[in-house]
Length: 199
Length: 242
Image (tube, rainbow over all chains, first blue to last red; front, side, top):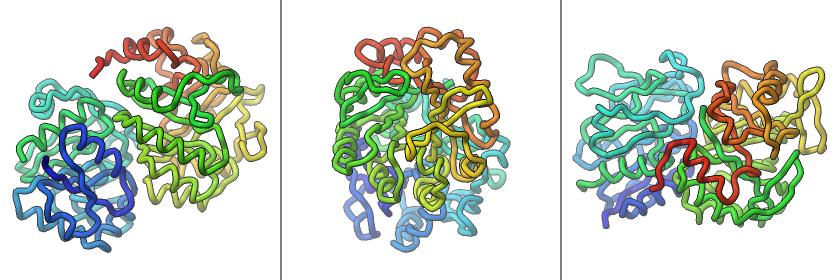
């Protein structure tokens, strides 16, 4: 069974991520320090909490370095919601801290991207989207007040949601998703199974 | 509109309640959560009615974990101290809701919770009853309805994502559309563009198709959610069993 590391700095929905991994036949391993990752085949950065608190704890535990080092590898890294946002650059929520600058997008308030302040609810994935076609997922659940917007002309093609932010992006070895697969019922499980399928 | 299942819990049993009074137990929390998750309702709100006793909350959290739901879950009831919040947060809820801390302007607690879970995870849960001059809101600390203090309204805008307006007089009833729109009008002065708006109380599944877009979401409370009701939820949401 593949081992999937889950960043655990005391914030974030660790248990639901663990259950999701069990459901798709993987074993979730809590990563509290970089050495914990040695036996793992992929990494998940979970996504409930506030950016400032999460980034501070990530730096304190030196797990920010682990994620940065993985960007030089082909190991899959999945960022969920806040876990997606901290992979970007400037961040309006993070009280002066920047993200890890690993994917060229920035994090802004929903309304600064032209969306509504609180984006909570389900989005039906477009039938033509790669995400839907590859994973057979139908709908995904969002809950966020900040969103990722591309920095400039990019060599990737994200899927946008109806708050004008990036809903999903496959960028190099990163799988960044603003929605919560662990709360998206069978669609979320399908997406995760599809991503982790080729470990 | 999101269709949200409301579940009230007393001593780890899901209970029906009507007009803000518990009437009967309808099953274990784990069983009910599993059923709602299987039928893929849009979201689940679990309200712990028991306001004290850490051991009760511990068994509640154990039931939630055992149910293994993959549906967005909001959790609350009786959060008055930092420790209460930390305790609930261990269940990995998508969101946590507050009543007492808001009505009593416990800003230290709200600021702490917001820093941990993020504003998108903060829900203001406001039980209310319509009043000739607007609405009165339930304050659990004094067990009374009272006007919503302006300071509490500021806290909602500062720390909260969505507000649940829970019509206690309609709870467990089968409201008409005109009664619902009238109740929604009574709370209009307390709504803000900065916060999402969830309405609860007397919403029954068979009027959802005819109900206008009164809110971002509506809660169908537990009185309507036992036994075969999840089947109706499934028909309404169009979801299939996994």
